[in-house]
Image 1 (tube, one colour):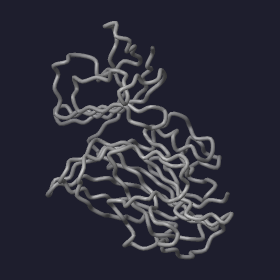
Image 2 (spheres, rainbow, N blue to C red):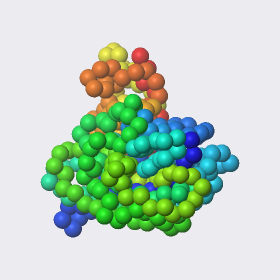
Image 3 (cartoon, one colour):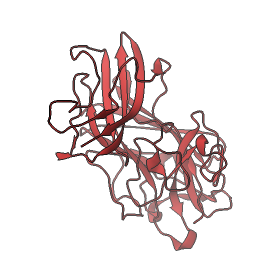
Image 4 (cartoon, rainbow, N blue to C red):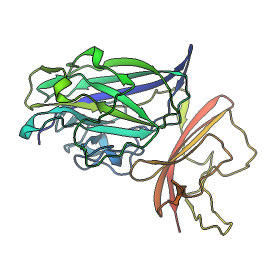
Length: 323
């Protein structure tokens, strides 16, 4: 079916009083596989499709294809990071009603009572005839996972950008900002359009596809103090065997267990973008369990952020779980 894109560059800021702290989310730049076609959102490390809606992943590595950058099936849009995603907020082809697409990821647990300011940058795709409102961010304590659902999620996003009205700009990035106070230790977020067709504000902006689809760019705040490195300075094993034999049973930062850092976080994701392990303790390690059951054998992706003597280093890599 024909598609049109809205481009999000999403900046997620955590604010408490006058102090802002970054909410760590996976970058769109890192991928398990270079996308080869539509519905490859899960190829981007740490991201997933929370419903049956077929959200897409675009990367410069796929240049010349339907999901390349800057040119792709839906139009043309550049990206400083050479990667973004896309999703429907409205579709009329084939008589579709309430068709929606979303992307989701895991985050470090939010702090109850803190105020979070969420800013995203969006731009409507070239081919879209329609522009809509209804974009928002839904935070949850549970993993949103409804593969049979192709309509709008029946939830109320804590951050709702509807007050901006339909986002019609196809050329420039448009910044949307909203705030909310966390009333739970939310661990997941989902981005998309949460309104039904009956409640959606729709504007005809001219194009060649009877839909409204938005590109989604970077999520997170780029920090000039963050330096991407390999795992030489901070070594992580590339495989472990959690079989209880006392040898190589855990996955974590290798080295002196008594070493302390200014700040530390480690996340491990499976191939579907689910975060199976998280810790802010440099001495902690993953034992190969997920939801109180042994995790499947295979390759997992990890990301770590370590601040030592005021300098922050971001790392990423793969680890193989063997049984």
